[in-house]
Amino acid sequence: MKKTIFALGLLTAAWSAHAADPELAKAVIKEKCQLCHGAEGEASSAIYPRLAGQNHNYLVKQLKNFRDGKRKSDTMNEMTKDLLDEEIEALAKYFSSKPALSHRIRDKGFFAVGEYLYMKGNKYSGIPACKSCHGEFGLGSNDLPRLAGQHKRYVADQLHAFGDRIRTNDNTIMHTIANKLTELEIEALALYVSGIKAQEPEAPKAVEQQQP
Picture 1 (cartoon, rainbow, N blue to C red):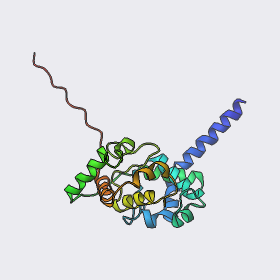
Picture 2 (cartoon, helix red, strand yellow):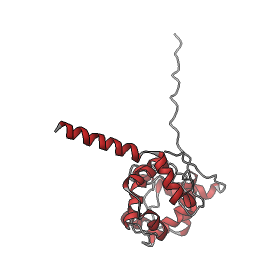
Picture 3 (cartoon, rainbow, N blue to C red):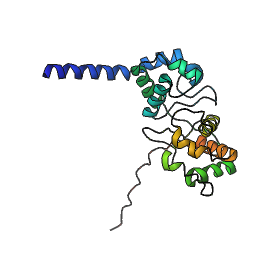
Picture 4 (cartoon, rainbow, N blue to C red):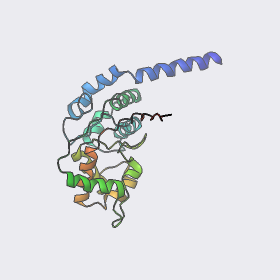
């Protein structure tokens, strides 16, 4: 019995090490991902999502949803149809480990509109604050996407897709929010999250020494 448990433990460890292998991820990226998403997940165009710095569990879920047909996209369904679980795990680990970027914002006034909506929502139309799910700094969670630094065009397109029920997964909650957003609100929110910078841990503050 002990030998069986030990053998299973070795197999699990071997699978985990293989799944985390960056060389496996790089091979898949070169074959399937690089043209649209870039070698480092920075995306070759604003119509494609940045994957660099995206949350690991969220990446795993979306790739499996594309592979299994739960999320519809002719391109992504084709690209993921043959992916093994270990390849998906390797891709998620690789892209989530890359540094997240942010966009330079020139229209500060419009940025402020997006910031207000993100932080406080719109009580007049029943739109909740985005930060209640995605966090104050747009970092998401294990299962929710990081929005900070994402391409503005991609975010706006996804909000439209949620509102029109074109997006076929994660739609239950997001549809009830996105279908209430005006075009101005969508563009302002997309601009705002694209400009949220990566949050670095605060350095510990020096303790002032009291004079005797």
